[in-house]
Length: 222
Image (tube, rainbow, N blue to C red; front, side, top):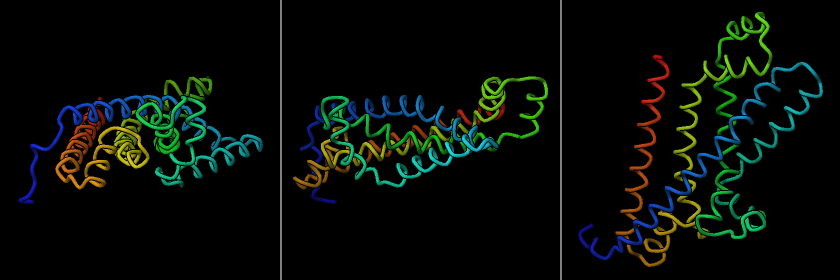
């Protein structure tokens, strides 16, 4: 550790990489929520149905979600390169990383949503149905409000997972702090850059977890 020289670090490049990481995380978290939440609600609703066709749809959807979740992200991002290039025009940098991040994280978040909805008291759901609530009203007025602390906790876990995904995307030119750490820390043996990049990512995770925990406590007591 004595030979470390932090004056070698290009702080402008570090600032840009930090901004890129925040940009990737922000967009990926937003679109993961938009896709993962309805997907999780569908998984929960389909699993409760006694109709054979809905049951078949649940099994197909469940298998697809499990397959995507099973693929390591570094492999997933490589496999998706042709698709990413077709959709956004590039497969590297911030723009080319957001789509694989969303595809990798949305099924993960959907399972967390499904688990949170399963924890809602069946008595509350049955009472709302007995009062004539439609399936959509049950979701909007019972399931989502009752499971809100669990959903926030799930989104926090997903956002933290996205931090590690952005770092892994650096292996294939994804941009951000992960890319900087690999280019300078691994290829050029500049350990100082890698250390600072890792410290920044640890700070991101700590902040995300702290905000998520506080929101969970707030909505649990509400």
